[in-house]
Amino acid sequence: MATPAALPPLPFNPARVRTYLVRLPLFTRLVLLAILVFWLLELQTVWAVVQWGSLVPDDVWPTQMYRLNTYPFIHAGFWHVLLNILALTPLLERFEAEHGTLTAVALFMGPLSTFPAGLYILGEKFILHRNTPVVGSSIWVFLLLGSESIRTFKSNPHFSLGPYKIPTWTSPLLACAFVSILISNVSFLGHLCAVLVGYLFGLGYLKIFVPPEKVLRWIEGKLNLLGRLPHYVSVDQKTYGRYGVLPTSNATGTTERPTQLTYLGGTQRLGS
Image 1 (cartoon, one colour):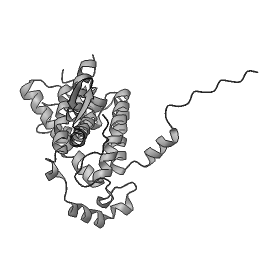
Image 2: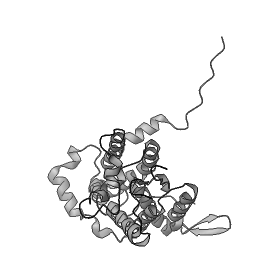
Image 3: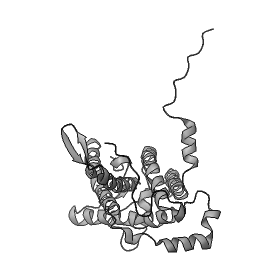
Image 4: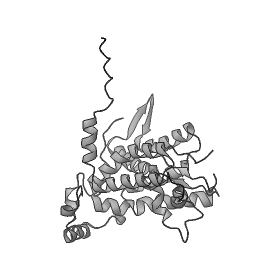
């Protein structure tokens, strides 16, 4: 009897993936869980989740301000969810490890969601005179990439592309442009707004919105968050310092059709 052929090795180590997932901090876990829950809810037909939670410029003010915070959790299909999760998880995990769980909650439920949304609404309504809805957590992916590119620029100002030396801070902008060219129906404006807010964060202009450390320590001590919440990252457990940005190496439409904000800027409008 012929010996069955051996299966090819997996392109990744399942044990390492499991270890990485087990060590994810609390806020990152909650964000990923919320994204998955909203995607599962999209499978039913009673409640139009995408229509409810997408960022629709004409519908935000004054009665639907919640859209400024819900749109990053809403996605348009399985592949949209998968690609966004793969892109967002390492970036958000490092951010939380660097800044702490409470700071991550305050920023991502506040200015790091509402500021890109506000810029998008201004550009969409008053410059482009459109009302194209957007959804997807790649708004955070591009924001974090923009922030990281500022830090990279400080230590490694240029990267080489053939005979050209290109400033490293332009890499998220180049990604926006390439994806807009390669993928049809993408929201270049949405990702551009995210990159701009990421630049502001990386340059330190948004420090004013970070809760004071004394307040965070008081809340943590009063509620005993470190003892009660598994995978919680306290102010005193931060890895890379209070206001630094992400650690990095020196390696060189219509209102019914929201626009996806996907992995590395791959946004697509729902429908045709």
